[in-house]
Each structure stands twice: as structure tokens, then as C-alpha cells.
Amino acid sequence: MSAAAPAPAPAPTGAPASPAAASAEPGRLARIFLPNRAVDRATAIGLVALWTAAAFIVWLVSPWESLPGPGEVWRAFGALWWEGGMGPEMFTTLKLITHALFLTIVISMALSYLTVVAFFRPLVSAVSKLRFLGLTGLVFPFTLLTGGGYALKVSMLTFGMTTFFVTAMAEVVMSIPREQFDHMRVLGAGEVRIFWEVVVRGTLDRALDITRQNLAIGWAMITMVEGISRAEGGIGALILNQNKHFHLAEVYAVLIAILVVGLLLDYLMGLVVRVLCPYVSLDLVAR
Amino acid sequence: MTTGGPPTPPSPPSPPSPFLTVAAAAAAAAPAPAPGGEDVLLDVRDVWQKLGGNQILEGVTLQVKDRVRPGLVTGQVVALLGPSGVGKTRLIRLISGLDRPDRGNICGVRACALPAGSVGVVFQSYPLLRHHTVLGNMMVAGIANGLPREEAKTKAEMLLKRFGLDQRADFFPAKISGGQRQRVAIAQQLMRQKQLLLMDEPFSGLDPAALDDVIKLLIEVAHMDELNTIVVVTHDIRSALIASDTVFMLGRERAADGRVTSGARIKHQYDLVAKGLAWRPGIEREPEFRELETEVKEHFRSL
Image (tube, rainbow over all chains, first blue to last red; front, side, top):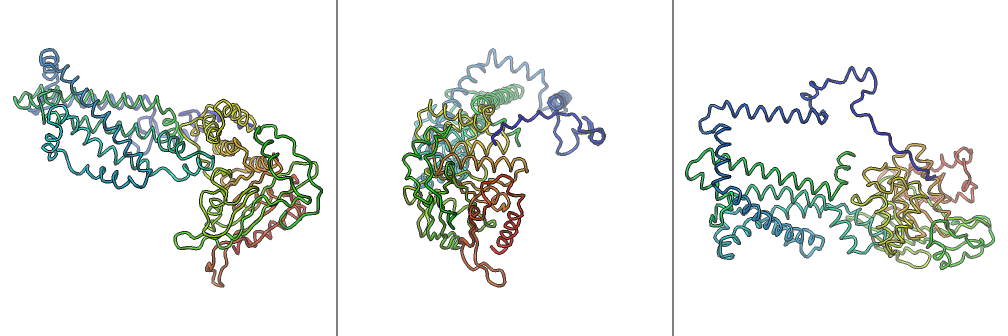
């Protein structure tokens, strides 16, 4: 036995199997309107471009006076960037989210990994339940605990993200199939090695994906948290100041900046996942 | 073996395995086969196991003894047949040391109460670490068994070549076929010499050509060392009869209305060596084989 199996020949993508199959296969245009159909990359990019253009046109011709036009928003962005200190405010916000995210990862991963020990499971479960508390009511006790300012914002953001992170990550750890542990045991691995290979390294891609989701959650919470204490500034404080003076174009300019930076952070996190866990994309292909 | 074949003289010392560096040392440390080849390699004695209030196993008793052929290294391939849900996988977990029986003993060549890690197990789904390449998975198995990294790598590469997987060494498990996963899973178990290898449903979902390959592989691995024993847990009667030298059938007692009235125990046992139906290529074409297959199928229906 044991002759090497021939490498599977790559399936010709998009090539019809037979003339009959070709005639039954819907065309590219038809496919984009049919349910459960895959489209090629060029078509997918074309669809994104189409929807983006449509959204931009709707914005251009919008009859709503409360929605400033693109030119107005662009000019407001320029003014905020060059004169309103948007760059330094964005840096302040990025520093805050990075600090909070780092603390969230350390606390949440430690708590999630502790679920392999029965003694700690109630504690982890309790932390997870705290996500229903909401942040508003916690401002006062957290101010007393931290003394306010930057420390208050970091602790609020960390608390908010940790409760969601722990919920998702503990679920990932608890749902590792028993077979994975058994497999390592019959190979002769000790419990520490099993923990490292199965729990830590085996769930790394999902841990990074949860980090990515929590970064988005934290980014969405940032304006609220920065609004609690505006002394250090930040993009949240900037938008609240513009809100107060009813500078609509400036508000939209900041909102778009928040969206673009958020998408950029999300893209970077996706890149990290692809670099550190190249097998993830293979799993997707295999499915 | 268990029902006794013709008396045979003691076997000569086994030649060193061509690809298991630890094998020779382990074989040398093992007790020499007694005259007549009656060494017990696996002894399952009156094993009981309850699960969720149900008696799954009820006094399972079986023995696997060393098969001896003069001038030939002869391992053992034992099939454990039984219908789905009868408790075959449960028995595998007990033999492999992953679980402990409520009652009874399971002994190997050297000791009773085999600890997890001392018995090789190839699970049905061939679980591999998805974050390691094929070579990485092999090395994890070696390092877990105390091999230094370099030695683990050398041995892993040797085994992968032997199993025809050297071209797949850098592939992640998601990129190899089911048959290749199975071979990696078996090769992983050979990173450390373990004389007892349990395989859970190795024949399921295979096409006829792949099935032949797996049967050949099992026989080849078994005959790598005199004391090697492969226990194949399956409900594929034909493949089990082709591959093995002994067949045990695990079943439960039933009332007249078909209701199960007991936990599982060994209900039938076949010594294929004594019947002259082992170790012969193309045995499945013999009329005696077909008769036996029919008989086993008849018994299987009542399990």
C-alpha cells in the first residue's frame, strides 16, 4: 500500500462540464439575481462598485436638508483636519482603543482559558453575564474607582469589550470537541502540551476573529466613552462638540472618518488573521 | 491464537524494523514468545461499563495471543464486529486508557490498567491539529512522546516517505484527502513504538480501491513487529474477515420481541488461522470465505 495518491487536479473554474450543462447554466447577469449562487471575483467587485456609486448618487440628489452634500462634507473634513485638530484627536482615540484592546485581550484570554479548569467556570460565566449591565450606570462607580480622566475611559472601554470577548471566547474553548483532547492524550501528550496545542494554538484563529469583532464593538462605543470625559479630547469629544453647535457637515465628516478608520482597522485585523493562521482560508475552501 | 492453531515452534528473533528505530529496542525488552506462541498480548477480563444509567458493557472478556509463524514476523489483526451503538467505541476508550471500566481488568503485555498514551488509537474522524502541517502533526506526536525535535523530524520524514505522504509534508490537514488523513493518523501512532493499535471504523466511507489499500496497510503495520496487535473496530464484515486473523463479535441479549435485555459482551469468536482463512492474499475468492461471511452475517443480525 502506501503509494502516494496523485495530487488532485485543480478543477477548471467556471468551465462547463458539458455542452448540456453549459446550456443549463445561467449567465453571469442571471447568476447575480439567483439565490445561492457563487459569483467570480470580478463580478463581486463590480457589484460593490455599483452599490457604492448608487449610494453616492442618492447622496448627491438627496432632497433632505439635514443631509449636507458631499462637497460640503468634504470641505468640513478639510477644515477639521487642517484647523480643527482632527488628526491629533484621531491619534488620541487610537491610543485609547489600543490600550483598552490590549487589556481586554489579556484579561479575556486568561479568563477564557481558565474555563478548562472547573473551579473557574462560575467566575467566567459571571463575567460574561455582566454584558447586560450596560455602561451608563457604571460611570459613577468607575469614576470613584479610577479617579476619572483617561483611566476612566480605558476601564470603561475595557469592561465593555471584556464582557463580550469572554462570552465569545469561553464558548469557543468550551466547544472544542473532546476528540481533540483524546487524540493528544493517546499520542502521549501531557496536559500542559494538550492545553497549548488544542486550547491555545488550536483556537488562535477564532481568538483573533473575536478580537476583530471586539475591536469593532469598542470602536462603536468610543464616541460614547470619550463623551463621558472630554478633557483628553479624542474623536468622540470632537463629534460631540460639533453636535452641540449643530455643525451638520462637520458631524458627517467626523462620522465618515470614524467609519473609514474603523474599516481600516478591521482590514488590518483580517490581515493579521491571514498571516498568523493561513490554514483558515483552506478550511473555507474545503467547505 | 485464542481458539488455538496448530502447535508451532518458537519464532526466531524478529528482524529490526526498517523504519522504526525504537521498535527493535521495544521488541528486545518484550517477553520472548513461549513455545506454542501462547503469549497473551491483550487480556480484557470481565469488563463492565455503565453510561447514563444504561449498562453498555456487561462482562466483556477477550484475549489476543501472539501468533507465531516460524521464520516470519507475524503481528496480529483482530476485528471487533458489532452493530452501531453496541458499545464498540466505548470498549476502545477503555482499552486505550481514556476511560476506566466500572469493573474488570484490561491488561497488556507488561501491565494492567493501560494508561492513556501507551496504546495507539486512530479515531474514526482522524483528528489532526489543523494549525500544523502534516509534518508538524507528526512532529507533535514525536515530541509528545519525548523525542528531541530533530529526531522527531527525522523520524516523521521517514514515516511520511514510507506511507507515501512525503509530497504532502508541508500541506495543512484541510488540503489533504480523507485517505491521506487516515494514513497520517496511523503514521502518527508509529512515531513511538506501541504494540497495540486500536482503529475505530477504518473502513467506513472508502471506495473499493482505498479499502484494499487500507487493508494492506493494516496488515503491513501489524507485521512490522511480532508483538504488534491491531484491533479494528468495525461493522464492515467482509473487510474485517479479509484483514484479520481473529474476529470477535460484540452483541447484546434480546428478548423474543427483539427488546435488548443486557449490555454487550462477546457473543461469537472466530479463529481464522485455525480455519485456514488468514494470511492469504485473495482469500475473499475462496468458497470457505464466502461460507464464513454468510455465517457471520447471520450472527450479526442477532446482535
